[in-house]
Length: 123
Image (cartoon, rainbow, N blue to C red; front, top):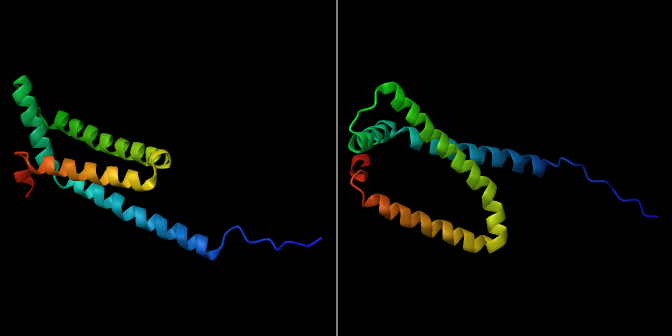
């Protein structure tokens, strides 16, 4: 019988890849949270105006902060949902088609956002 040489479970390349992946995903996540928190005043003002136009009342600061916390939570839940569903969807329709659909929908939604009245406040 020929004895097989066992390879170590943790190779230096595997450790380097894991560290690079962790650091590579921490930056975009922090950047996205910064992008979400930077326009907090604009978004809460928009929510308050929408509630006033719909119900004729203005929210005080505490309920408005609670509404803002729901907005941030929904953003994170959507990120988790997308992370869990991205792989199965890409396996089903293919990575190239999935990337094309994602990019085209992003461009479509960005063009819609650019045509709104509130986009001028962000510039």
